[in-house]
Length: 497
Image (cartoon, rainbow, N blue to C red; front, top):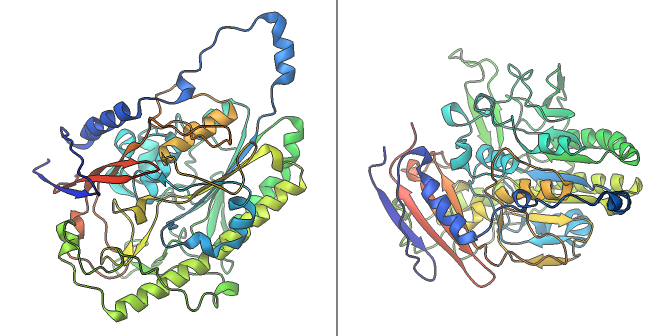
């Protein structure tokens, strides 16, 4: 039950608002408020037209453009505000310089599983009611038991004639024991399986729920790349037969490495967990020896007044702790170099097949990451920009090259965007998001500048212990435009149980 909350304002101007609260579903009041500010819903629900004159059908069919291919590359915990993209020259060459960056793109829940479900469903976490990475309110089994796979992105695309492919991390909890329970909607579903999802030099996959494929000794991102190229070799040929494709690639870089004990002393399978910094491929271990976490104003600041108590009570980080954070930063940058190479390999494969002019490539991350933010050490999950404002780069037909756009967007907008590009439909429910104006001739959604950011469960720091970290449970409203960025947050002293 909700027993109270503390309101924290983080803005250059005070935003007045009031919300009614109940338990899990009650954040709907804030969602409704957000919709009233947005003023619009997804175009895919408002595209009903008069039937065509039969005499015009043949002409219009001849003029109908070829359905585009769509490639979506999603990294894991990649930051925007610590400048990780500056260390990825191949992403710059193939995507940034030949596409558009959306600098005000946000995740609405800063942790992997809820964020990834929002991408697949086009809904906020309070509407999917998928708010955790495991247990009663999250994880792969929850995704199936709630039927969230019955109507979601790949099935809409398949109905529109697309071949759909998935490679990499899907959702926490998809593992060796339940691998045969595939989510459906994918022509090829080649996913990493627990407990090997974050074991960078021992990746294990299962293709379409079949036997496990063990790649011990090979760097995980390289396996994702090779699998992607194998899929593309066939998918690109099939485009000449009129079959477009959607390819979703999900390497885990630059996520921290998590190793599960195979034979723990307590007898619980995979019960003991070891978490370390990100691990790069051997060929990248020596890079960026002098890189440091950017020393911005919010890095280990002297003044944390106005922040939640669990932050304002923190001492300053010590020099030794800062050196450790710098090492973690370098390891994250190094681990992303394999992703950089993956991007180039994928782009070159599409170019060599002559399909680059009919292919959209999206690049993003499930959530951001912080190191030293407001004296916090390593992690995500906060409502601050480091954790929720994330990369989004789009390259494709009629997308402006080398351009930055400042219109706000969120992960709930990605499914509506893919659906619109594919000419698909979702008639099962109404999206929370709406298509992102990605094309050069599109205008920003000027009446859409607010959205919810929420976090429902406490999570531990990834490096040094933080007292009272369980207080990081909140509901936020962000108001973003080209001229300002406001954050209204209700820090709640309750959790779902």
